Every structure is written in C-alpha cells, then in structure tokens.
Picture 1 (cartoon, helix red, strand yellow):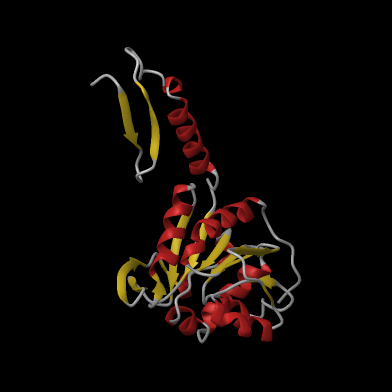
Picture 2 (picture 1 turned 90 degrees about the vertical axis):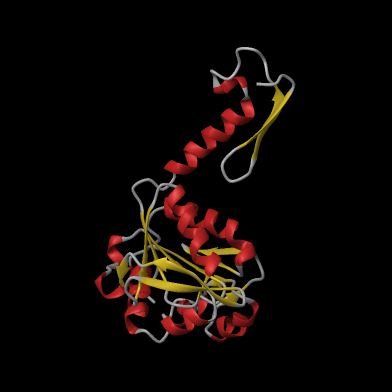
Length: 231
C-alpha cells in the first residue's frame, strides 16, 4: 500500500474517510474513527426494523423509484418486505416517461392479510393508484391496515388511495401537487412539505422526498400500534 493519503469508498459510493495511513493500522476500525462510526451506524440501521413485516401494495404503472427505494431501504433496515399486487408473478413500473423495470410480486393480494404486517407502503405514479382505487380488495386491505393501527405511507399520487378508503378526512397530508384539490375536497389538510405525518399516516410529494419518506416510515413503525378512530 502506498504511503500518504488514502481514499476509501464504502458500498454505495459514500466517501468513508480521508486520512494518513500509519504503519500497522487497519487491524482495528477505531484507528479510523469515521469508518468506525459509519459501520456502527450501518449496524444500527440494519437492526432498526428487525422482526418487522412490511407490505408494499402496487400494480402495473407504479413510479419506479417510489417502489424500489422503500423496498431496498426497509430491507436494509432489517424488515421483511413483501410486494403485494392483484397481479401474479411481476408488475412493471413507470420510469419517468416510459415503462420501466419489472418487480417480483411476493404475494397475490387475494392471499394477503393486513394483520400479518406492521406497515403498508403505497407507491405513487399516475397509473398504479388510479387502478388500485377501483379495486375493492386493495381498498379493503388499506382499510384493514388502518383499523389495525398499522403505519400507512403513501407518496405522490398514492394519497388517492387514502381518499378512496375514507382515511383522508381531517388528516394533515401532502401529495403530488395535482392531488391537492382531491385531498382538500375529501376533508384533508394539505401541506407543501417533504413529509407529513398524522398518527401513523405518512405522506410525501414526489421521488425527491424519498429519503425523508423512508426515514419517517421507520420512525413510525418503531412507535408501534397507532390508535385511531375507524375510517
């Protein structure tokens, strides 16, 4: 190894540390405090949702990043995450201006029970929630999750599903801007914020808010059951 400055990058491209390497160093992570703290934080994140089960309910036309980012983030936090859909085998995303990648379906909606999960995530996209809000099984799953005090998280156009399920009235929420009028007409209190939480109901506006969205999902799940009035 060359002497001098060492530049290391951790998985995912984040700079871990820049420092002078000493002879004999490297056997103890504490010799490089930034790396040690990063790895400790990574271990903490990976255990935050250990033992938790999360459902992601979607169908064809979901916004690609709004399913894939929560899926990977929540798995990395230690949760068991199932993609649930009325469709079997796989569903196709919408990636900005065209059809995107397929995502494997773990369980068909008709075989899934809301009581088996600690949280429900609803990705957006225009096509996906528009189809699901006409699906009686999907709405029943959302209502059962709500009645069970589960964390429910909806992003972008997915608050349409909260409206259709009768959950929006009286709640502080956000959404994609074009859904604002629908939220307000349903009695929701719309806010222009990256993430809004109301007693375990988490909403965000668009893919730019995904970091805040995922962080808040984890926080709300760890708060446990949310006690609410029936929808």
